[in-house]
Amino acid sequence: GYAFSKSGELLTRRLRRLGFHAMLGQEIGWFDDHRNSPGALTTRLATDASQVQGATGSQIGMIVNSLTNIGVAIFMSFYFSWKLTLLILCFLPFIALSGGFQAKMLTGFAKQDKQAMEAAGRISGEALNNIRTIAGLGKERSFVDMYEAQLDAPYQAALKKANVYGACYGFAQCVVFLTNSASYRFGGYLVRQEGLHFSLVFRVISAIVTSGTALGRASSYTPDYAKAKISAARFFQLLDRVPQISVYSDKGDKWDNFQGNIEFIDCKFTYPTRPDIQVLNGLNVSVKPGQTLAFVGSSGCGKSTSVQLLERFYDPDQGRVLIDGHDSTRVNVPFLRSKIGIVSQEPILFDCSIAENIKYGDNSREISMNEVISAAKKAQLHSFVMSLPEKYDTNVGAQGSQLSRGQKQRIAIARAIIRDPKILLLDEATSALDTESEKTVQEALDKAREGRTCIVIAHRLSTIQNSDIIAVMSRGFVIEKGTHDQLMAVKGAYYKLVTTGAPIS
Image (tube, rainbow, N blue to C red; front, top):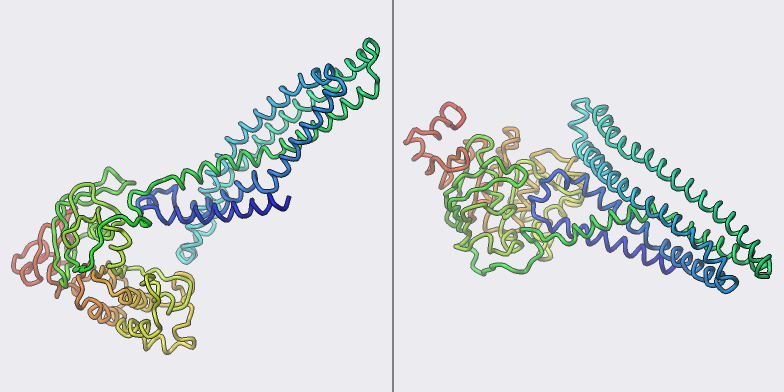
């Protein structure tokens, strides 16, 4: 028992580690599928490994013990009376048929249960991740009802399983009673007609009963086996999946003198989950090292998508993204992303200290506290941190819940700075801030942009007027580009946007 239990625990631990490793190694498009939502993946990671263990570990020891008992009992029965043993064994296929039918039915139910529990996990994960919004909207009851509705499917499946259990149990008991009747009847015949000693009849029947008990113990693990079969198949499907964009591969182009020259050449793209919507429709724009390129345009025109192609979250369906003349699809992914710093509209912080959140910006080396402080000063963050009781050791809470949006934004800027990236991506970094916070954050961003290729996705036009290139996008391609003064002189879409605020068409 000890050896099998220990091996089962080690298997569970290894499966979870390999599963988590495989999940994080998938391309971003894989996570866009609702079946791979955080809630569903968390549920899968927690339950699948434990269910695989349910059919391994100590259960294997019990099954081996039971099968050994069956083998020894049948051998002894043949030794005492092979005729009586053969008669009894004629009934075993019926019991095996019942067990096989039960296992097949329960495997189907286990698959349905797993899908329902993953759907419930998606709902609970969404609710808990957005609890403030749900509380503000008063939607607690609605989410409870949705969660309960998803749990109804396993309940209905359990009722069907109960019927299967009952039918199989009744059939098996019927076979047992028939076996006993036939055994004693034929045993009496052998005692009378062939002189078989009556004690041998009882020995044979007792041995077979012992093997039947062992068979019952082994078959009791049928539900665990059914669940484990589905879970193991899902796990191996995940482990065997080869991501389209690999973050663990050492293959791909790397070069020492990384400049940050970027070219989008006739890029076309649709998201895998929305293949009927053309997001980019022939994007052509370039930016030289040290320059700032600003994308402006109405929502859904492809601004953020173009940045995601540069980061290799996705690859273009047609066209190319060139980085220092290298096709992005041939560039090593970890190498490329190590050269890029990102500050997004809604910065994501981790549940650890301010210093640790800043250090997350560069995991390729050991970062000293002096570097953290230097990055914080450049991000206009240091004076705020020093006003806190625990200073840089202050925990920011889950998703930075203990800080204001402006404070979180400055931590994200410091995190980008400490990487010392050649390319800086600013995705509407100040759009959700108040005027005072925007001014502070904008000063930090201006310092961070110095000496770097910068791509800005702008919401407030006042923040991009000094950009070297302003690209006006509509329907997935650039309709105007130039400096602020050049575009104002043309009096086209950009001029209309600046003067009237009218959407770009």
